[in-house]
Length: 471
Image 1: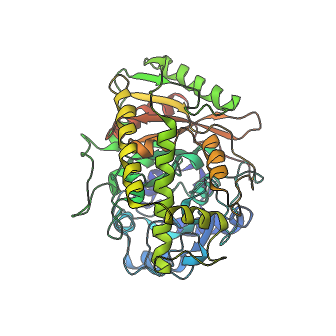
Image 2: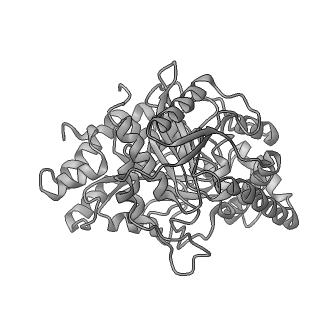
């Protein structure tokens, strides 16, 4: 066991490996020991690849920036050869990929050890992680509460100290939601910053992104440096950054114009702990020399919400249809809520779907226009603190009622999926119950570098890496 392993971020582990202070095998055995001790109470890791990792060590790890660092992939979107890609669904429980995702290859080339897969909600639909296939994942800060979703397994694993960073995906907030619930840093990159190839093109009509949840800002930045970029033939990709993201984290940004708002754009109730964390973050940014004022974009929330739901409904049916030859799944093949969403998707006409995309693009222009006057928009990440387990019922079949509950929880995060803009949850708050509370910073399209610079400045002013749950 590496005694101070839990206090190290990924770059610190890699630095020790590079200078020979620890070996990759020692790192792997430490990860295994912690996972075997802690995961049974959390159910964060649902598949292990210990032997495969040992074999890779024997053959020789790539000499990259994360050489010898363990890494878990979420059980959604990406394909790791040799292990099923289940999407946390019984329907895909035996699905064996024929190709490996470019993101996985890039992580291997960066020197990482792929050590397993983490729990997700079924098809990534829920903002919690309680799939029928694997069972519920629990929050290390309080096991009666959710770690969020759909990347809850990854967030719980990192918060529990099993490893310093883990893969996550984000179609409506699924990087930032669990980052907020588990006290982690979560950056959703600009649309298409990381390729979905070779299997996919644009996930969820461009709403979906991939990256990670991390304990430090610099790990997130260096990881994006190592994994960003298109494949030939990708439908589109954002402009490249001016300098590395890791370099951005070391630079204080120029004086920024930061708008902040604590009111949910749909009028949903916002918990006092979430409001306080955002107001404190706004005050901190002002103390750091930025211009901070209360403001928010003007747009039609109902239109944005309706378009968002239609994209999810249609894509849910399309994803299921790959295994059912385009038919609805039989009862029990997927969770009742998933099937109810698919039924709605099957009933959506192609014209309705196109109209939804066009409506989302109109609202995108209105939201993005707000950022011509401001560099950053600060809000709570979530409208409430982490819910207790079971509050989002996978056996429900009333889609409209589910949507109302969803939007009462995530009225802020999904907007950046619609616009494709980068956004991050920064772990700055703590609820009265001692649960983490994230603050949400959204930036202009293509400007992850600016957000990383601001996050690095905030982290230096108010560090959080030593704030960990008692396990």
